[in-house]
Image 1 (cartoon, rainbow, N blue to C red):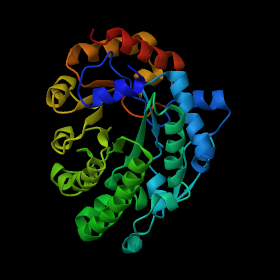
Image 2 (image 1 turned 90 degrees about the vertical axis):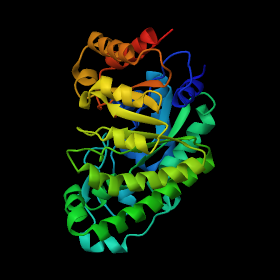
Image 3 (image 1 turned 180 degrees about the vertical axis):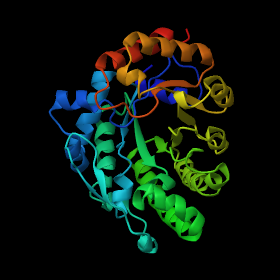
Length: 343
């Protein structure tokens, strides 16, 4: 199977020749920058640079997909008024100023193609589709409306606003959802078939389940309905410390991506198996970043043994790999995934 066939077949919970390996955003970017001489900051302005960095990840790491999306969580928020700055061109930008609360009602939906930075991702996706799209899965990527809102007005203001000014918060998230739908429409138009939805805001440490389901989940489900009508498969990512994965499964994504360190793995697998594709996220914060190759291999084997021979498993880091993740650990992650895949 080609990487594209392997990845997309696993998403549909059908048998594959081996378990696919998922690559998120621009993980372990130090290796990509060293190989290409390109910097992250330049990729925010130039789709050719972004595409070159992403394609280098495929060539160097050999995962089964590439992704047209940044892990900084700011690209959509910046399009809606958040101010940022690059303190180091190797890394993602940081927030300089959030949109003031009293300006929420003036925020309007954005056409991603008309935004100077958000449009770069779509243009880069087109380049990647043209160059490797028949061989490798090219994924669209977007943050959930609540996560975008937390970067538009600040997380603390969003949390307080859900209690003190719920009408304003819902108006903001409706606006952001409309922008997200427009992104999905353009992504589908250029030929992207899978969309990754970052929804790490869906965690008990941030919000009650009741409030999550009345707000965050409601808007994710709304945009997912549009993505499905466009023929796109949906992947929900949740790297929260206490993720509401049961609730997320109820809105029927094609796949769910969870950092396994945050959950009881056996309980998670039992809930997901047969209902969605499981993107099993091994720990990226310590294991991949500071562990040894042998420790990485042992964790891959543990996960494979727990999942068993059922179709619908994709191996993955728990979130975007840290900037200087050791190459030896990334190589062993792939080798172990191949070695322990059910025969």
